Image (cartoon, rainbow, N blue to C red; front, top):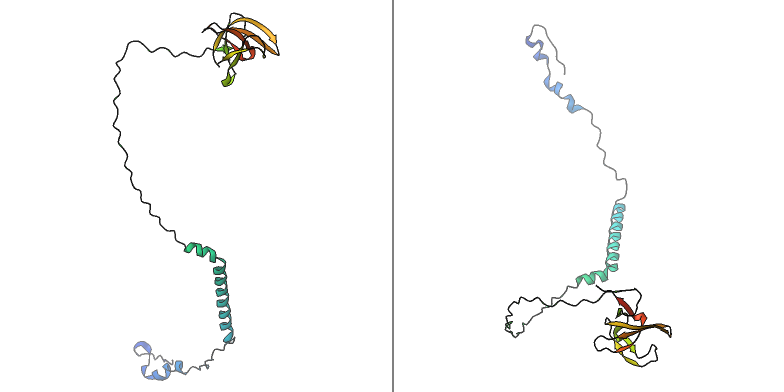
Length: 201
């Protein structure tokens, strides 16, 4: 822009000497370079081919997954069926309660429960009381003589207590003791391995 300043004028600018059209036109007269058309670097069929290959690979992966998991998908498709159970109540006979007869309390205490006598491994002697142990359900053979071949009187039950009146006699590998049944006074012999001395209270 050609602006000439003149002294003595207001603002110091000579407005008559300004050529506005010519001064504002240079921007429109700048040389312009021709626009170049964009040039395609790769042929158009290459991106299309790559896209087609990617889609094909994706379809192949999905088809393989479905074929491999077909049994699992079939089992998932089976829905459980509901079973309806109808419970029919059965009539029960009502039994009226029976009255328990009243027993008045008594001042006499009940008899004490007998306790089994305690035994020890102390030596057995004549005059002591012994208890039949470790015989099982068959009991101890009560014999006429101190021998396994002697006549058997009866079987002495497990836990019963007898008085020693004779012995000891060693025979056939056993120590025999002569016993007396306090209930009926019967005397006989028993093997000492099945007898234990009763501890007196």
